[in-house]
Image 1 (cartoon, rainbow, N blue to C red):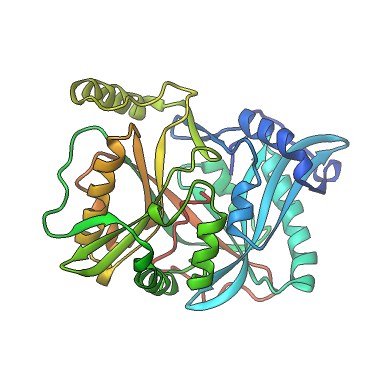
Image 2 (cartoon, rainbow, N blue to C red):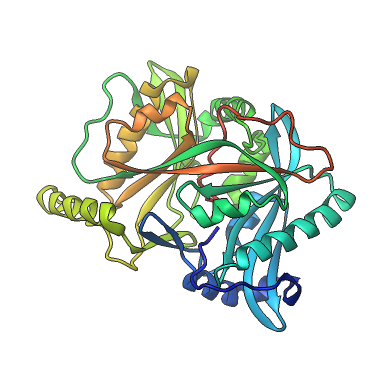
Length: 375
């Protein structure tokens, strides 16, 4: 959810919602560019060009883009994607609300009110969707205030951590586990590991053999070779996918802020020494790798670290600047990132009920799925 950029006090009655089709792509990309996310002095443009609908198409069975208009002027938009996700171990239809942007301060409240009215009126009567969820960066105070307004029966059910691992100094690979690119013969074990992991994660996408093969076919620049397996002896004990999504999903830091500006200076100094790629200038895009899925035996951080060490060495040699890895704040697998230079961003996970019943059985949830593809 973006942070608006000017002080106004708009009246709700002056605005209306419209469903926007893919023909609005260019206008939506332009609006996202002028309304970056701001938190703790950091300003980020989540660039989804050339097609803002690529990720919704990859992560849902249906999506709707809702535009906020004042007369004929587009003042904001949000994309709601219909998905099958695990809720307490059971498959449920949910809505993910992402890519919410507004052009003026104060419009976020208006927009959320309009969205709430629409969701409550249309979604329960015409779909099987019971819940809506969203990720909100913890330090994005204006966005969190919108969540607390009560337009939806929502609550913070936990936090996720997205760790950016910087590929600056050389790292040795694990001596305990052997890591290699996956092969077709590994498919059965890969699906078994990932499917079991997803069933235990709150809000994880459903995964089986057919969905796995469909993902291989649908995802751009993606194949079985994007999966890497960790072996103990001849047994596969861990797997993860590593995906270069930068052809349609780029992160541009417009303002690093004081803390990250210092980190960038130190990083670039070390990069010159070790022959690593420098971090981009403000406005330029990171060249990063996304860990889209992963699973390891017994949720062992040592196996996850072995996978990350191999990917670190592999993609550092190819000129990438960072690897993105995320999980629930309570997940022991986050310890696998401790050996690396990282920047960690904590986000609140918001769950809202689209039924008349309040959220009673969904308090704090362990092992929330951090969807690095759509964040």
